[in-house]
Length: 352
Ligand SMILES: C[S@@+](CC[C@H](N)C(=O)[O-])C[C@H]1O[C@@H](n2cnc3c(N)ncnc32)[C@H](O)[C@@H]1O
Image 1 (spheres, rainbow, N blue to C red):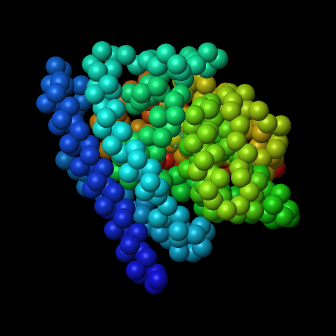
Image 2 (cartoon, protein in one colour):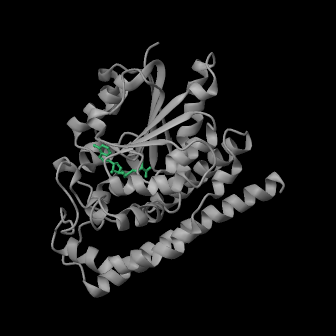
Image 3 (spheres, rainbow, N blue to C red):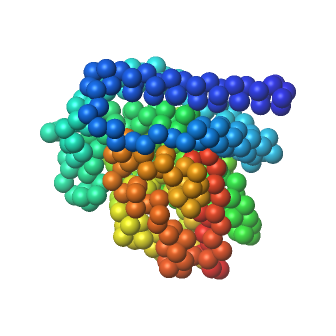
């Protein structure tokens, strides 16, 4: 397949996903207002230039993703990595879940779990129906729907945004060129269903990979995904990122994707401190999460609307939090920040 053809195929798939997600959101929100007309308008209208700006940012994200694959940083097959069986199995389930989700929103029940779900032992801030998700992060069904829901939320760009951690990580690990690739250890904190670990495996085929998360159901889903791919299976552990279950100075690289906006401020600091503790001197931490107000003032209305549409109790605090200050206070230095589409990336080094 020629590069031009592959690039065209990639752009076509990405754009189709984006149109599909927009159609999904438009139809579901119209249906919802038919079934249950809103009593109050909780969101503000978006300024007209926002959609155009978003399209430009989406194009830049695709260009960067394509160009990293083209220069061999990761295999081009990752650009087309989708589980069609999950799509056909679980997309209908998303629609079937809507009525109970809408009821939950109407009744403002944001901490609701099915009686058979074990909620003992989890921190209070975690026991939430983030995005109004049925059973929060604590059921098999939630784990099965999650990847699709996130792709729909981000107009089909969630994986492309996750892949933006790969170039700075690979670059940062060159500082350890004295050891063999097999000795490199990388941890993904709050690995969820394992999408980032799958991309890490494609990029660092020989490295020892580790993933941790609080949700046993999401870890089981990650295990299922990762056992289908070649290479050593990443070691998955259930635990709280506030107390990472690893030795000091153990990992050459630590990553975390889409976690920090779901944590209260103080917990964010504790997790960053823990990431610092487990990172080797000379190693790096890469955080990918939502853009903040300082990254894109033109998206202020959209960022303010987000927690009103989805249940995201810590997002308002997150968008104006000083993450660089938090990283510095943990001990990280040389902190770089990048922005792609709706995500920001913080690349922080532990002094050698
Ligand atoms: C928005 S999801 C992101 C998952 C994944 N990184 C991704 O890219 O999709 C947030 C994840 O953080 C996990 N999580 C939240 N608080 C946590 C904590 N204190 N310790 C460990 N995991 C946590 C949740 O279980 C969930 O899997």
